[in-house]
Image (cartoon, rainbow, N blue to C red; front, side):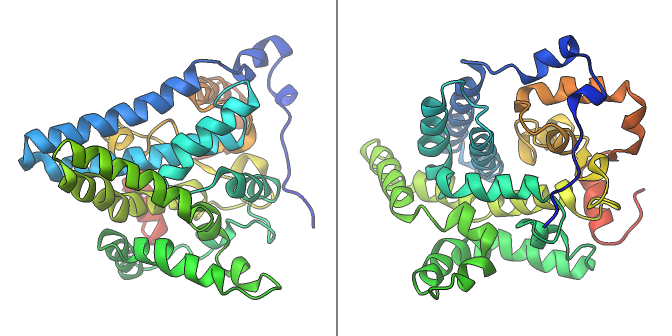
Length: 317
């Protein structure tokens, strides 16, 4: 069971050059968590005041729900706060649980993904191995996401399947990704969402929980999660043998960062090269690597439209 090939920071940087990238912050991680919730609250308020903007608000809220999952991912790497207890509390209760995940279940799963990235033992390989697919196949997947079918499967059918899983864990292995992300935190997820519903109901806005919190989670959130998963690893030639090609970095315009790829998740090649660098340092790391000869071997895409074209077997324009 060989681990994925690695790169050392010393291959590119002096200790002085590398030090700023690995520095943890006591305030940046909590500020990002507060930002995610502030954007969600603002989008809900805008949807309440101007109902005509509800479709846009659904997209914004769904993307920030993905943002909470991304910040859970930061916590899995111990990057949200230097104090591990506070890091885990923020990552679990304010990021993972509200979107139905469990930091305790996600962390070992995700670190295994890093250890065996794109190897047969990689638990995330099932997300990238099927690509490229036909345009019709991807269209069917996106329709399932946007019509709530993916949500129904993950939030109802999967927990039921896990409760009936065999002692050897075969049912768990068949749903590794979904179990780690959505199948292990059912009661806390229901509790947090009940609290949100009660708060909005006391404000006379019970409907906003359904339309501006649950509906984004059931539609836009699964769809942008799928696009993010495709962008990170699908159709990257040499990803199993070359650490410089273990993942893809995707260019993201302002609207893509707002509606598809929050909190620098698009810098995934840099993250796989140096997984302990906090997400807010990834843009600077990207620029630093770009000044080295090794940068030419990295997989990059100009935008998410280009990624979708590649994932459906079409050349980029």
